[in-house]
Image (tube, rainbow, N blue to C red; front, top):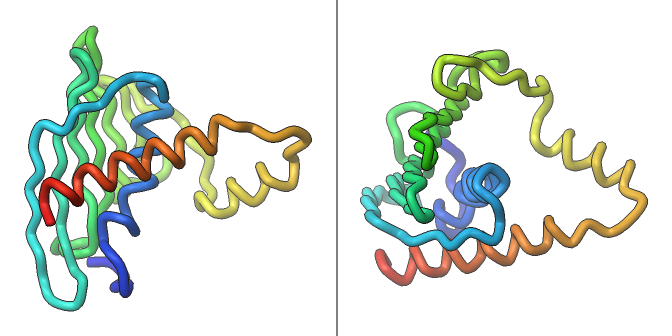
Length: 147
């Protein structure tokens, strides 16, 4: 479940996942879409299961507002066979895991983190703009293949 917007659930839910993906694998790596599973419901509800590949890195994400429970799940398998898993349904200290090791993340909302970062900003960071543009291109490509 999740909020219903007047626009695409993919547009609403995917930027967070794709931002994490690009931050982890590097913004300049090429991503290819391997598989898209889309389940549509009424009133703009949709559940997206997307598989991506970047060279030998396998990426799987589930996102949208048409799942039985509100959950954000991302799995990345690296070239070295390391498994990076982000599961938003778990407690903060268990949300992010590499293989069997949990990675500490801050207990704050993404909006709070962005606002704090914005307030501290002393120079323009173009990396955020590059990530936003790449996310927009990925979402456009996914929508063109499925809609």
